[in-house]
Length: 222
Ligand code: DC
Image (cartoon, rainbow, N blue to C red; front, side, top):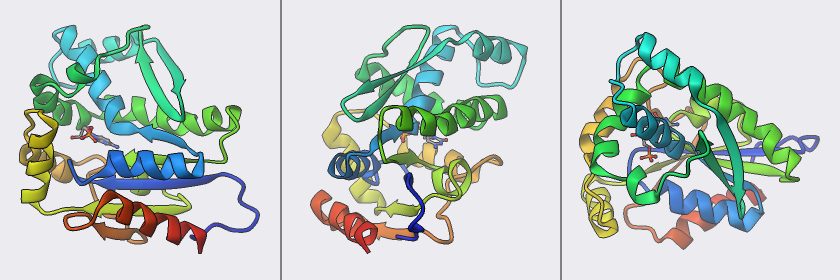
């Protein structure tokens, strides 16, 4: 890991397309290091859920800005993971992974006001982590190593072949539109999904979760 000896707070970024294994890996690495786990995909999903509940379209207009302005945000801790809450409402996991959210989330995630809103929030989680005595965070998403935390201590980029990724989603029992989301996420103008130049690239297609986690832990230990 490229941490300087003086550095006391480590950030591990974990980026990759849908169903490459980010969540399980981030969760396991964070647990093993006792770091705060942050799933930024959940932030985009929660925003998308609330905007859709208000029948707001994925367009950059006054209605969207007003809705974002009205959101009261709370950050809670569930074991070592961040729970992001808007207007005191916990969204059920199945609602976050519903077909509706899966089809809309990338469209909302392409909008500047949504990204700016979450960028501020996500960066503020360093203080939240420190306040709760974590020595670091594992942050998963699409633009973590490139935009949110470009100075992350270790950057990891996960990949997997299309067949494996589709099979993983089917096993989870969620109807997803992986290819469509990946295309929008990778080609949008703002903060597109990209492998940072200095990232450790891991293909998870033929590797078990334990193998992927141990590659990352070994890198950190170096
Ligand atoms: O990780 P996920 O599949 O739950 O993410 C849902 C969507 O959120 C993803 O298709 C694109 C968006 N997203 C993003 O644009 N930037 C991030 N850092 C994380 C997620």
